[in-house]
Length: 359
Ligand code: SF4
Ligand code: SF4
Image (cartoon, rainbow, N blue to C red; front, side):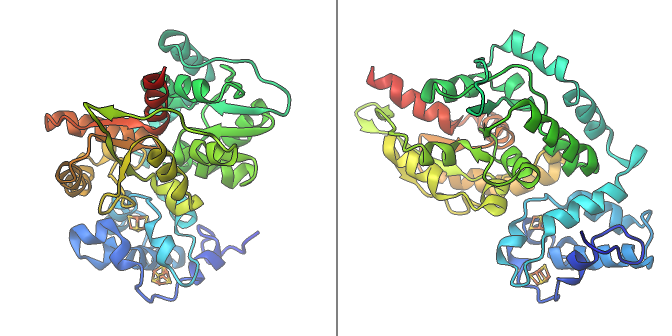
């Protein structure tokens, strides 16, 4: 347990770890947009220290702006020589900065909706996500709150690839949404509740949820689907073709899967098994979806996304694959808006398409 500092907002050793070296600046997408120190990880840690010591209070406009402008992508963590846990600091910051009515209303609304398990179950009835009874100590598929409403075909594809996965309808939100929007206590409680409902290993098709759940339930207990497939020795069948050639397919990494869990190789290997893989420049950079960010700050989200869309269109790919529903939504909507012929789909959908093409 960490000792509280002056105001007890942040874990003291978490804040103290930063040595202000600035190695994180080039990795930060918001610093790239503004070139302003306050919009960098180091600048935000300086702001957090000022909040902690009372030199700034939470009504300070820069504090309010920067706590919201940060994407929470954790790209800064991967280059930090001092091991600063920036994601944990951001959660603590927003717990304080966004408490009660200070939290953006869209986030409050979404958090209220996904906290109601009965509502998620109702969505499932309408949208027909995968369903299969739990087997004791087996592996169970987490259905997700966004995914079961928007992309029910993803859980169906995952089950079609791995029929041993249980998919019980009685499961709620994992709490990542709460943790990233200023209520980390509720986020942790929801993660534990989901852990109780799904005893055994939890497999998720959402990179962001995987990172949050593994923080609270343990790394061994939680597997993102590409990790699970790799560990299960999954043999991808068939191939995805466009006309008389193999499809060209790129990957958009999930920030939390890549930066929080270090999973990068597995989704690429799986794509290579069924198509020609194309590494995009900046595949590991945030797409601007960032949980609720695209809704809370649409202009900034688009500014982060636009160069990535240009790179996708210039790459000559047929498909771009996501491993997180937020990224999938962001890519699908924006490619459609550009009238692009490139399709965005989830990794398990691509693998399922390859399998179906073989039959
Ligand atoms: S790289 Fe790490 S230690 Fe250096 S300024 Fe950034 S957060 Fe602080
Ligand atoms: S989480 Fe992402 S946007 Fe926020 S400071 Fe770190 S690199 Fe920058």
